[in-house]
Length: 151
Image 1: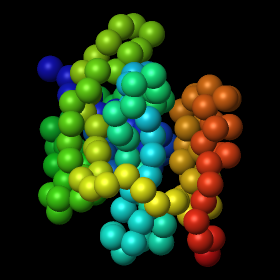
Image 2 (image 1 turned 90 degrees about the horizontal axis):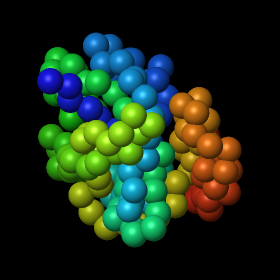
Image 3 (image 1 turned 90 degrees about the vertical axis):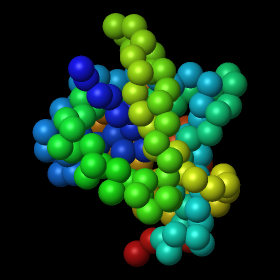
Image 4 (image 1 turned 180 degrees about the horizontal axis):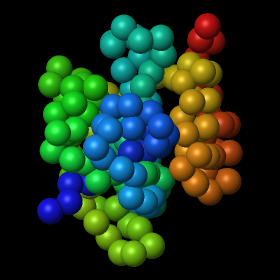
């Protein structure tokens, strides 16, 4: 049985290979009825806010799908802050060109709000572009407001 993880914020296959070497990227798709946003500014000890998704009828999030090996699942939960209570793991439906699949996503366990740093937003947009996100989606990401500049 396949166990899919869907990423709207970390779409860079090279970065995922570092975290989860046994879990290949198997495609891309959309989570309908959700939007990419930011949260946790000033809470996590990070400079700026981090990505999350929230339910939002009429919106959608471009995601990369990974076939997560059980060996990598625990590592991914640790890296994403599930064990620390920073993120929750939810199951959602992802629309792909081959139909729908169920995948898990990581959702910030707090309130939406805050701005990402310019560096962080650039990383997200670059990763989306590498994963094959549509040009208009990447342009919208790049146009979002940012907070403090990161060094």
